[in-house]
Image 1 (cartoon, rainbow, N blue to C red):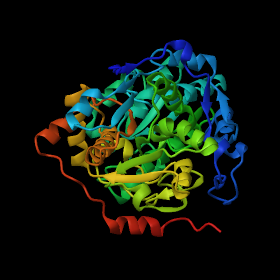
Image 2: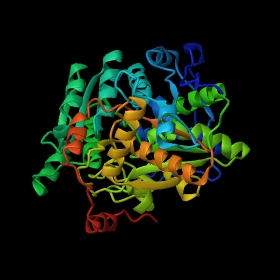
Image 3: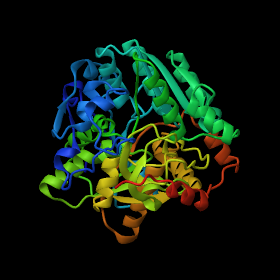
Image 4: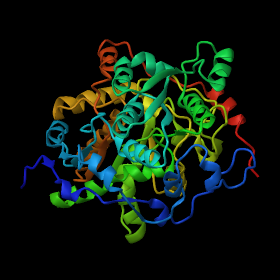
Length: 453
């Protein structure tokens, strides 16, 4: 039996195309609606905040979309990323399961987010954009766009959710080191930020609020566009390099997954790994179980409603059909800041509604425990977000131990936790607790859902 631990691809195997799951959906997505007219939004209307190439990808139904060579040239700095067989973790768990993880922490920003930051910066650059405004939760997306802006000579303005701004100073420093401006959200910089602070002076912020501020800034200047790090079709598209590479690497291992697992906040990390496998299953059949894992304190897929909603708190964005907790919902300040979003990617929401994706949620403490269990076996300390996928993978491996089934488990280790050590310090010091969202707040937020005819 082979005892290979890591499966590596050389640069010539770097994917040349992204995979677009819109081509294989059994039922088309519901249209994105203009927030004012509630009619399907047009490319011209989206052009206020996005470059044309990104809009074309957002609306495309082509199965493969070519990755531009300048983007592939930057990808080569860290891609293809390694696929690991978690042999030491398997031994520690005494499980017959085979556990593989795709490790995206090897990127310069330490996560999967540069997979979309690089192309988004490139497309803005070739359209003549000078500045990009964005939001970030835990800071992984902001770090990645700051990096991409540095590569392509773009000014980057990042609105960082205030609780994460305070919890993660090194993420903020990373962004600033690459020349980005980082602003705690809600802020006095924008009208939407000032409105939130007037009503809630001590607001800890949310991704919905930060998105409002970034979109507002982007709409005010002709030389500025907006970039989103998750949720939208083009973002999930860019992330599929992860799953495409994983298919090649598992073929090297002579294996194929029974379960594919990723954490979900907006959905890009999960989709990046799962969609190439899911697309193949939609075309050819199969029985892989796709598990999307979210925090119990922000349970969009497991407790939200499938409805049209705004992507932001100030209602500046188009209306998307998705699982949502309501655009005004502000989740508790748990440490997995990248998973603190009120909605879920429309593509993931659609596939979950159709039954192709199985969502589940876990509490903060059990995820940190799983992360440390993984670290002691594999030597990598995961980001708090990634701990949710780790927890699910361990859970499934333990079920295999009880049943005796030798299932193949594949999960996305979407980033390392080197900028999140305060969270681990708090966990080890007994200072963390499982946070619970207020059901009354969700009820109020859902009561404010737009009425769509």
